[in-house]
Length: 246
Image (cartoon, helix red, strand yellow):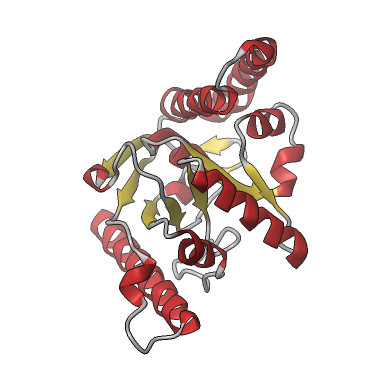
């Protein structure tokens, strides 16, 4: 209960003050999106470590080129995945997130200011435009994080992956960077009950579409093989780390 109070009251106050600071600085910023994303990175670390008592064990950082561009894909267990991902990933990146998150006061303002990309999953035309924006961001040399399941999955077994991230990888030649999130679903026991949790943030080697586009293999078959391979990779790594922590 104490952590819940700290998170919702103190965290809310910090978020409000921080948003006002961003709002005041915004007209004078040269590189607005990078500045705001860097602030979100620090804000996420503050909320998790000092207010929630959450630690993050990061492995596989050697697979990340600080100057590289990636389509980051991961499992999606909890709302706190965004906090953990924002705190742990050592890259400038943009989230592809559902449109409703952009309607949250202060948070939505920061997400738009950081250049995050909204998506309406129910409308195929809008989703297609969002993927077009993803390609535009990648061309600028900035990574994008996509949850290929499309929504949170409370079960241990991953849902089927949607094709969007993989189609963009095919069209742009940008590698996928698989990330595995473990124990993020254990942080919030109930809305006001927060457990100090040791989460895991595991980065795997980049995956390239070209490795699946063998001679005699069509685009659709190559995409399907890539999707199955990445999904199996994330599922296997997740299962292994949940078992180790049990």
